[in-house]
Image 1 (spheres, rainbow, N blue to C red):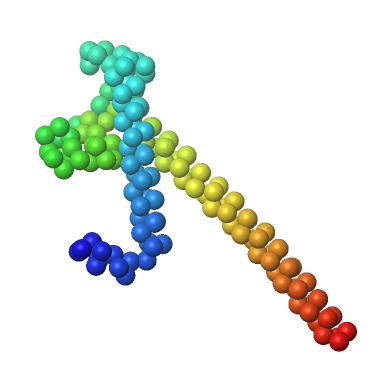
Image 2: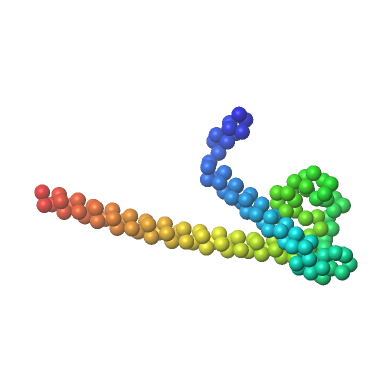
Length: 143
């Protein structure tokens, strides 16, 4: 009941944009997490033992003291939803960055195509309206 009352005045456009952005972040986390799983399967180089890892599988930084994704409940949730890592590797960071480059580029392409389609449709409707108006004027002049 409280959720309904709070969202009564919310514009659908804002809600959809928020949900779309949230889904993009969730997908980015899934993509980065899947790259981590590839590393654990030794598809990107040696994972275990840690001292034999190539630079691509080494830790970039270690935030496990304050922001552990295994003991702190908030960061466990962030790992589940957004793919947070307290000890990311360069491969995971590159994957996350690559995801955002592709997502933003795809977004720009889709928006550009949509704008072109809308412009073509508007031009068609304007021509149709002009022809209808001209036909009506011809009919009035003949009568």
